[in-house]
Image (cartoon, rainbow, N blue to C red; front, side):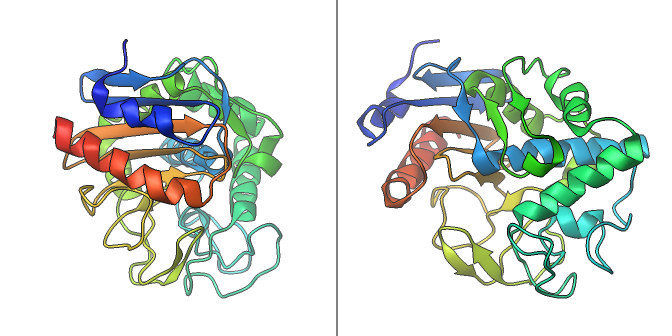
Length: 275
């Protein structure tokens, strides 16, 4: 599909390679760049892993109240970054449910728990539960549970299929999807990496929820119900249920000040054009 003018500004971004897709309820509406190029996802891995956890809950492998992590922590706490675990270690920094503490290690514990309870290697569970049903043939997680917070690689074409599932869920029930995109542990403050303290710092079950956060990586025209994730590898995915649109952008330059300036305008342009 040829790129439309709405995504043309990506050609001027200070990155070597960028690819993007706008997704609506009927499929891909516009693209930019090589949508089959494989990019590192970094933390954009987390929504994929979260979806696998949501599938596991519906399959009865675990439930949201299954104990996992530090004493008092559950699957729900891990998905919502309220387990109290440190970013990259098993050190408990707060009591579960009292602070929003973004944790890569929490997703390692989540994946280890799913692997143990299902008796299926986590990478396989993720592939069979998420990647294969959505025909995400170029997406993979290397490193097993240890890399569950950051270790996937994928393409814009594959993530566009996942974005379609975020707009019209097929891998989970409508109720599970609604729970996943509803604020868990409302009112908790915390640091949104790269954007400072947010009061509150709202998250669902593995998805960051925009709410009224400022500053933010999405656009001013994105609704407060927008959910998604960005990664330190320089890409992001969001779905806005009010606009009924999703946007995937992947680059090969690490997140930094360059992204803070150029991401929101493209998000706003997409909302303005298609909603």
